[in-house]
Image (cartoon, rainbow, N blue to C red):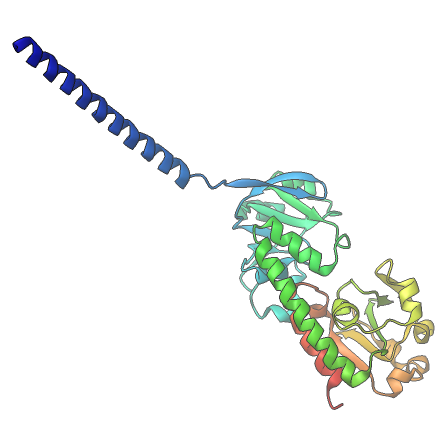
Length: 315
């Protein structure tokens, strides 16, 4: 009888021990899984750049933008860069958003190194790309590879905010549709426009995707380009011309850049200029070159407002 009792108790203890060990093992496994899950977010990811795959921070926080453009794309996505080159500082549309941001020039790499960026964005023709890459992951863009909407989405992909970038594009397209209708009701569907700007002694006419409000004028609002502009300029993006041939490129409305240190609009004092129908009809619209240079979302929204008001004011 005692033997049976001892056997029973031994079996009972064995069962309890197995259950206890199983429970401990389950708890240990749970803790391990929980720890793994909490630390599962990757710190880096692969961005498929035009020059190949680059490992970049999953959520970059210290971005240096050394291309003249793109700073406004980041600002619209809720990211203030830690450094820019000198061009964005002159854009009035940013309304002081870059006041405390450092300026990096081509000869201030030591300053860039001291800022400890975790991502650098520049143009594909930047001669310092290799040096930048020794400081932080560097992604370069060819300026005219994407249109202005594609560019914003691409930057969104790079910084982990593609969803936000696409949301802005959708919103912009809706606003553009309404603005186009408003403008066409005033100036008609066949009105043409031209964008001129001087740089030093050279006079340029611009295409449909080269800043200076061209994305708004030709793409968003759908104004037509004079045949000569479409033939000669839409391909390369811009073209240097002499003042004598301005009438060949002039549309019903003429936008002229002004205000930059390099601007020389003396051509507007010539008889050739004064004889252009758009000039005689007072359809010349000056714009701020320093701000209209850009085609990021913040600049585009301000440009749209300015251009629509200029085309419909008093009409």
